[in-house]
Every structure is written in C-alpha cells, then in structure tokens.
Image (tube, rainbow, N blue to C red; front, side, top):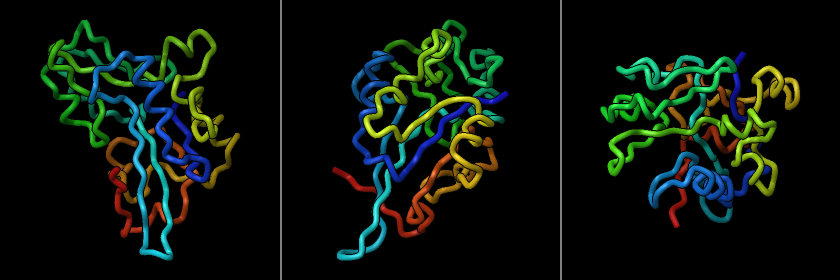
Length: 192
C-alpha cells in the first residue's frame, strides 16, 4: 500500500491556503514551510498561460531521505507514509541535503530536521490532512494511490512536470492533473 497526494492544476489558483493551514497546524516558525505553493507563467502577453504547483513531502516509494538518515529517524509507516521521529534525529541534515524536492526542513534552534507526515495523526482519527481540508478550491486530495487513480482517472502525471526533478530517482507518490503549459520548458516562476 502507498499513500500520496493528488493535485488538480485546473482548480489550484496558487492562493497558498494549503501552505498557511499546514504552517499553522505544524506550528512552524517564520520562513519554514512543509507545504509550498508556487505559480508559473508560460508565454508573453497577450498569450500568457499560467499554472500553480503546491507540494510537500511526496511520501516517495524510494525515499532518499530515509536511505540517507544514519539514525533511522525516518521510516515508512505501514500505509507508506514517510515519517520522522525527531527524538532520533541528530541534526546531521543528510535528509535535507538528499531530498530532490527540498523536503525535509532543518530547525537550527532545535538542532533537528522535520517534515510533512501527511498529518498522520489527523488521518488516524479519520480526517484529511490539513492542506487538503483547507483548500478552498478542492484542488488537493490525499489517500491510497490506487484509490486516487480510480477516483481521478489514469491519465495523470506522476511528477514529471517541468518544474520538478525527474520522478525516476525517488518515485514520488503524487498524481497531478496537469495543465498542458506545466510541461513547457518556458515556464518561469512568478515572484511577488
């Protein structure tokens, strides 16, 4: 069994509500995000297209953060969630340096790293992750990967949109209903 996220780019407006509720739920310090939202443009005025991408830990099939953690602080739960036990973390940052997606995050004030756990505790109580529940456009979902494929169709991208690293390294558990422009090499990130 594997769990992961689904993102519908036709619904995501880049509002960052998912980012804010995740930050709040995890009580993260200013500047630290477990979920990030980015917006991109393709083309020039008047023919501009855009897309947004929001991501956190992809709970990969082959997580390099887990492989490179020398203390076993990162492990896979029975459902495939990649979890970190901070009490075993020695702050070496191998997981931070290993992840091609920029997850986990290092907390210098605590001397340990931390990461998205897909709101494992909330899910054990029958709720969705905070980012999924907090999305006003219902662009995000989380669950068993086979169930997500059955629910949203098989014509989904597995993380090969142009702004992401190759999915071949870690086999991320993410399904994306991608906009066509998300595959364009001309994509440029919007900065505010």
